[in-house]
Image 1 (cartoon, rainbow, N blue to C red):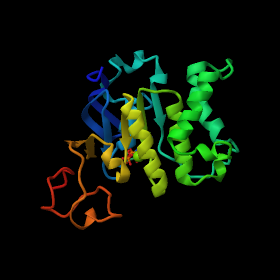
Image 2: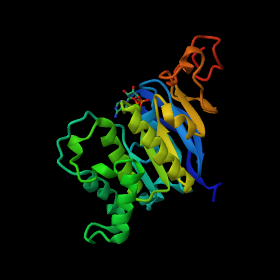
Image 3: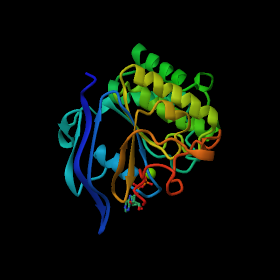
Image 4: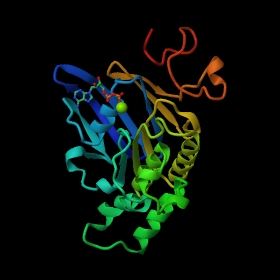
Length: 255
Ligand SMILES: Nc1ncnc2c1ncn2[C@@H]1O[C@H](COP(=O)(O)OP(=O)(O)O)[C@@H](O)[C@H]1O
Ligand SMILES: [Mg+2]
């Protein structure tokens, strides 16, 4: 079970018009891994995630999810996906519980009313991200970090095996980051697999098992999680970014 291949991208390439964004990219993720996709803005992290989920076509190469070519994947409920956050203020007056309940739709079908298992899964997911006391509140009254946690709870409620998160903690307050790291740890302890895009790892650092750095359309580093160095090791400087030459191995492929 723990050696199952969840995702395999072979020689994947994505281009927009003439512009190659990903070139000959190879990535295999095994069950139980927590992979952080790192890289500068515009390096192609979201493109990688979207191509892996079949939301963007590959120019060449192939993608397999759970051992099946993308075109043959049917059980999308095995995957929970939280896209990169758009600007705030969607104005939808839904409550936390309503939004999270939407994560059960794929499981129960649209016309069947929510059963006990559905309600339990929703409650559990809301608790997991630390929003138990806000379940009945409109999402619009929540902070950005709490709204992001609501989306993560929605993905968790579907009981996925693979959670794919694009910048789940970008611009998110410290309390939400901690709550999110805890929810992720619980998910992984139960056998879940995670692929997340991050700019700053922060509290996620202890949960992530592997870092993949995208640079110039290829993988510039795949392995250990880059550690903050020097003065960046001080509290509040937990972000991951290129350091001065000579600081650390050339994981960023910039020299
Ligand atoms: N739908 C699209 N059409 C054209 N260009 C795109 C599209 N999506 C992304 N890009 C470009 O591809 C590059 C990588 O984008 P993206 O994957 O969003 O980067 P990241 O998530 O690492 O910040 C950027 O230069 C971006 O402008
Ligand atoms: Mg992105």
